[in-house]
Length: 230
Image 1 (cartoon, rainbow, N blue to C red):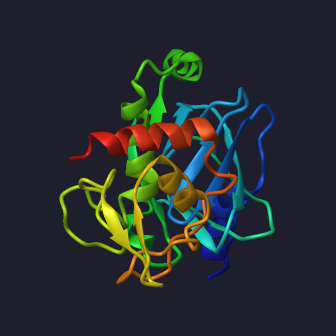
Image 2: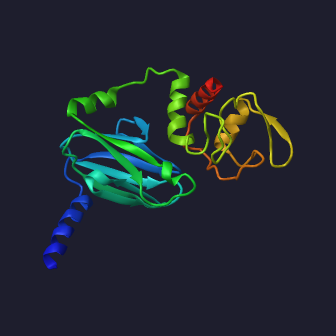
Image 3: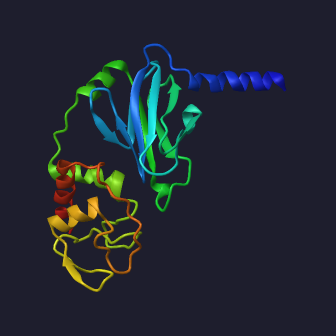
C-alpha cells in the first residue's frame, strides 16, 4: 500500500513543481471556453499549442465560476478556481493533437467547453508564435463564434439556449417587456457586452457578459460574420 502511495505521490508531485526554464502560458476559463495567452501577447481561444519535450507551466485563472482543465491523454487535471491562481506543469512527449475538456460542471453549456492541445516540434511552435492572421473580418468573427457563441446560438434556425443567428441582422425581435427592436450593429454590441439589457422574449437570461473578454475589434469581427449568416 505504501509503495502505491509513494508512486502516486511522485507522479502528482511532477505536476506541482515548475521546472527551470519552463514555458509559462496563461490560461483563463470562461463560460464556456478556454482562453490561451502566450508570453508574446498572442491570444487564442480553445487551442493550446506547445513544443514537444519542453517543460510547460500553465498559469490558470477563472473569470467566473469553478472550471477544471483536463487533458485525458496526459493524465493531468487542475481545478481552476475564481479568485485564485492555479498552476499545472507537464512535459509533452509525443507530437500530436489531444482533446481538452472542462471536467467540472460550469453551467448550461458545460458540455461544449472542449478544445485541443497541439503538441508540435520546436520550430513549428516558433512559427506558430510569429504567425499573423490573414483571415477576413468575417472569418475571424466565425472563429469567435465557434469558441464563444456556438453552444447557445445556432446558424441553421434551430433553437438551442438562445435565439438562432440565422438571418439575425435586420431581424425584428420582441423583448420580454413587450417592446420590439431591430437587430443592428448597436444592438449586437450591447447584447455582447450587457446581455441582460434587452432579453428576447421566450429565452432565459443565461448569457454571461463579455465585457473585458472581447475588445472592439473582436466585436466588429463577430458583427461582420453575423451579416453573412442568412
